[in-house]
Image 1 (cartoon, rainbow, N blue to C red):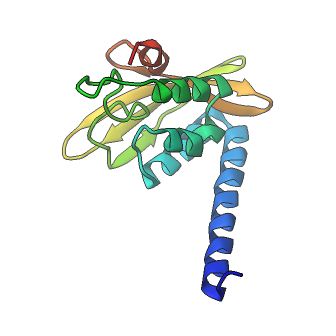
Image 2: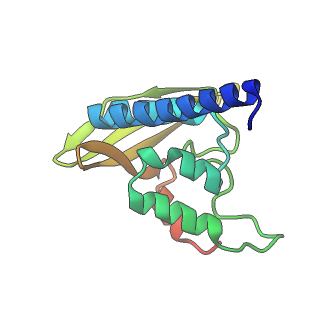
Image 3: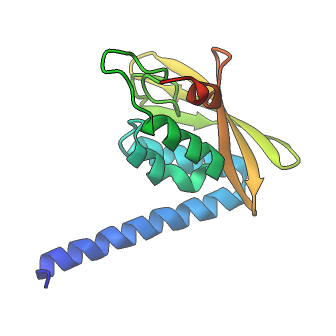
Length: 161
């Protein structure tokens, strides 16, 4: 049997996880910009490392296909001396995590949308990514991220690791 403090802590963790899932569901159904805003609020408040655990925590905002491609990429073996194709945080397109973000106006076309996200920091660093979303059963889910370099998250995920 758990101690009183352990049971209370477990209860708070369960409530917090349920709250994040509920917030993700509400935001995803609201609008493309609201879904992106909720994703990056969560992303920047947690460990931004591109890991299997991180992708699992963010799966509520990703299309099943994109989440699966991320998991597949992260599960591939990598030579220990090789720099991976994705070297840093692909959701912000940086190795140095930003300190703030601003979600721009969504451009919606039928069941797809594109939302610009501008990042600031650290220091004078500025970067913009364009999040591509699709409507899936009433929710706007992230399906790709386009970078200023001309490539995208899906293109990087397809490269050999």
